[in-house]
Length: 289
Image 1 (cartoon, rainbow, N blue to C red):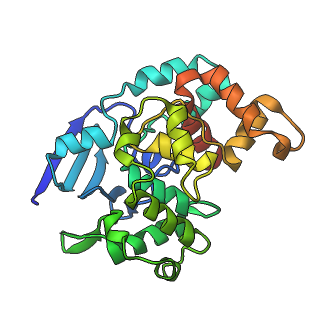
Image 2 (tube, helix red, strand yellow):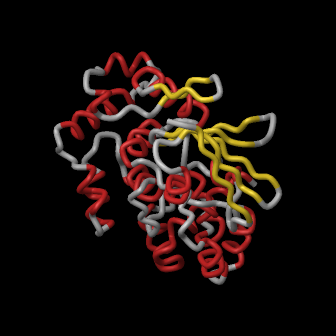
Image 3 (cartoon, rainbow, N blue to C red):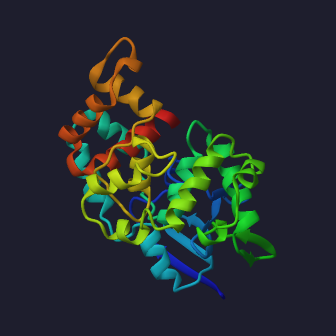
């Protein structure tokens, strides 16, 4: 694989911090010297940098860098139109959109997203990133770029002989058994990722994902929203989303009494098939601001 470079000028709705620090991905790291980000996705290592009106993508790509970038960074979707439509719903959503105006939903590998969000359960982002990096370094394939070795996320086949104790040694804690059992289910074709990828009905997709160990409603929604499944109508609910939805709409004295079903119903009514994007703007605004 050879180094490639791709430069896009005047790219709307694109901000590196908003994209990589909104909780959707774990393998992108900020470079302090120039505020760029370097990440590994599929069989690619990419550095992304913004300079005035340019976004520069540079690195090692298995295929054509332009195609990889367009697909992964969701560049064919009209985020400006989405922001206009969502901003009309209410003033608070408009405020959150202005705060995270450069968010784009990444089209991440389905398998990697499943395992990453199983690992994310009751965990914090620095620790999640550390565990995933250890997993990749131990079982993924090396890619050398600019004198440094990066590692791809291991495939189900590459984890075939890995046992629960091996995973525990990487610091997965109680998630080790869940990752092991999920890997086994995928290898035994009890859940077919290709079939899941081609499914059209989001309710059926979610039902299938919920059969995987360690995948509850919130993790399933994250997988559906942040992977190549791209079900942008789902509304993942964590502590931050519950908090912001309660403050904006329900106003209960105890936010913990607010039920998931109540939030999902309101999100569907207010945001329709753009609920997942609304969730990202609200989540990023509440957590970051």
